[in-house]
Image 1 (tube, rainbow, N blue to C red):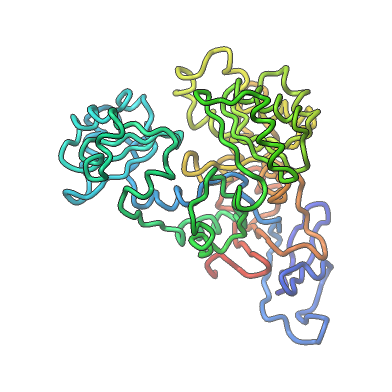
Image 2 (tube, helix red, strand yellow; image 1 turned 45 degrees about the vertical axis):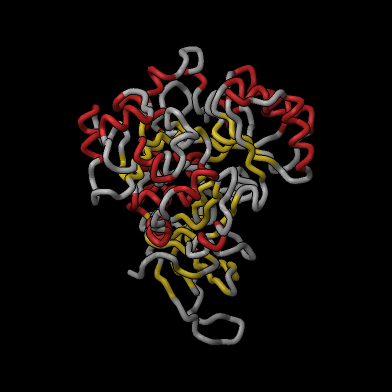
Length: 428
């Protein structure tokens, strides 16, 4: 493949030839022949002066859950309002069929349990997932249908997805749609962040055209922390040490989870590739500590925009100034990258970039730095990928030069995406 007349960051206008899945040549005014055997390039694309970038990589996403969205009812604060709105949403679909509802937050209709759901929908199995993804609430009809009525008095299941999976009807997963929509956004790779990947997940995800790294199956190993079951730092250190030399990716969404993680990494010793996922609350005094350990922070800088109203009431006032830091981490030299955390946040990396640039409170990044959050290496998310001879040809071609794309930060600027030189977007 030969892509003519593209803008390459730091190199100006050039032509790029791809052979055997890698960038073979970068130069000016190349002819339409491969140069190796004189044959015509089978695919020639006029870049029309648009920027050619490394393909975007979403460094933290939950692909099976995102694919299940097509068979789910959205019941978040932007989808429904109040008990009547929630009841109307849960009554949708064929009578007697299970209802899988996602995105719930207490601001919609307060705390939920089996009896609250029974009042709304008593005659069909209903299960509702909290916006965090950590909690499922089932009504009595669902508990009876699954044979779990005696196991959960209130119908609330905290981080029990793995066990519950065998008690519910199969959910149709629209993975083809996930792959095609991501390709249209210029996404050429994913890091799946489930802590306990289901058996057969790799085979299931093989339909995706993007490159794939699955935590725990591949490096790093995902470690979940919850305040209610938080291990002592020494206990977590033993767990981390037992996994070495593999790096770990530790889920940290509270101040105490971060502190326990830093203490444990101090004791176990960090290794190249260790990550802190989310880093939702980072007190200023911990920033030098994170820098010293050399771990990478993979965060969600769009959450303050998406969840601002909830954070204003749900988050401790002492923690609000420390939410989802970006600029202060980058200024300290801490390796920084981002993931959408979809379906628990938007699946659009460009929307994340815009939110990062538009942040208030001193944590905004400039547009180029926001783009770099999604162009790092899969196993080293803050290590930038560049277009160079010999590099894998995972590419994102834009309609416009880079400066225009950085001004807009919208998916509308994406023209095509390629994995190993193969186009994964629809033909023009």
